[in-house]
Image (tube, rainbow, N blue to C red; front, side, top):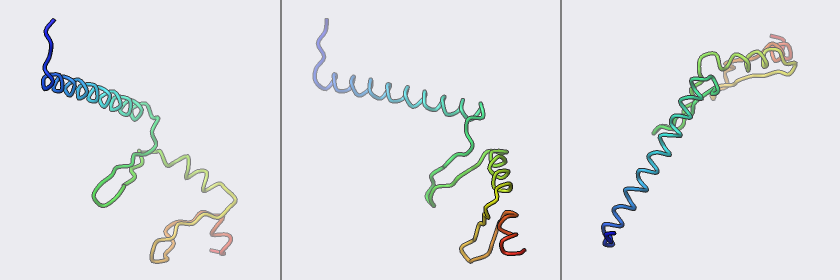
Length: 97
């Protein structure tokens, strides 16, 4: 059996750790891809230079919209300028719209 010098051993260990990390990343990537394909994901959060962005998958918002529309409590989305961009029927009834 041939003995490895310290520098060759460090290179071998670094290569092993890199390959192990690469395999783990690949495994995680496959799990995420499969979850998206199987409909187990409603939305994705993507980080960018301007901050996080939320992307909902087509149809993912429908069950939540049905709940908000049917609930007896008022729900409203107000923009930063104070404009109402959304309200459900319960909120409209409270403010007599």
